Image 1 (cartoon, rainbow, N blue to C red):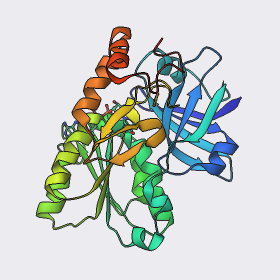
Image 2 (tube, rainbow, N blue to C red; image 1 turned 90 degrees about the vertical axis):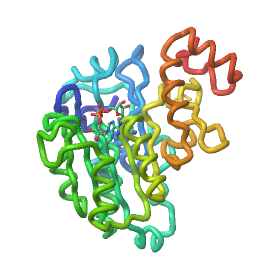
Image 3 (spheres, rainbow, N blue to C red; image 1 turned 45 degrees about the vertical axis):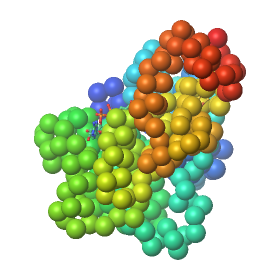
Image 4 (tube, helix red, strand yellow; image 1 turned 135 degrees about the vertical axis):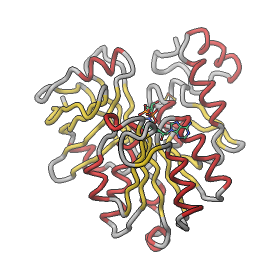
Length: 293
Ligand code: NAD
Ligand code: FES
């Protein structure tokens, strides 16, 4: 069992939990995810890691209530435990294994949208721990939905906060801030890492293509079982078929077909849709987890 040491609501329907999971904490890297399961019958929920502490053996996750399972999960309190907390899974962010001198020579721009701020945090923290100052844009619909501001403030080089409704700091979406920084403030970046809702990542990529700024995105939102078995996270990346949970979750955002991914995500939700996808795409990566019948 994996004991919950801290459980708190960060914003409406968004929860943070610090979990005792020494083996995961020892090995995990920014960009990777875990699968949590509350009990024997519980759904497997893939969640990108928000923070980890190797000394105390803890891993922090942040999740939003989106259905029955996450609603049940949000009711867990300090002292309760998860039956399973499996990980680290997926591939770490590229910069973890790249030549450090190359990484240090780049100017990074991180773009976090809503709950996507949680997986961006360990990446920026890694940068800070390695002496790299990265610029960070955090976008939220409104002030009350902004999360991890204080934590991000401590690790970012420059932090730009924007709210869609202008209730806090700048007004507007993250794409408006990117354009302002690059076109009006003369900022130059070598790499952008954008993590948030799919629609945000799509529009960030459209803009960064125009700005010729290479962009990495995290396709965590399309994952279901997180094991390469259910087929939910199948993506077209350039001319290749990829699975977010085993080949990612991070990909070159300029190569991801977001429209197809969003359409497929809608179709996958129904039994009929899954059957149709099986017929169209063949049996690869289908039928291990029980989600697709
Ligand atoms: P949200 O809808 O509040 O959007 C957050 C910010 O994204 C907005 O404030 C805005 O700045 C930007 N944005 C949204 N639409 C945009 C557009 N069309 N153009 C430009 N910018 C836009 O975010 P939320 O409700 O917190 O998002 C929840 C979603 O985030 C879920 O679908 C979840 O799957 C996803 N998520 C993704 C990851 C990941 O790894 N990519 C991780 C956690 C959550
Ligand atoms: Fe990747 Fe199921 S989430 S195959």
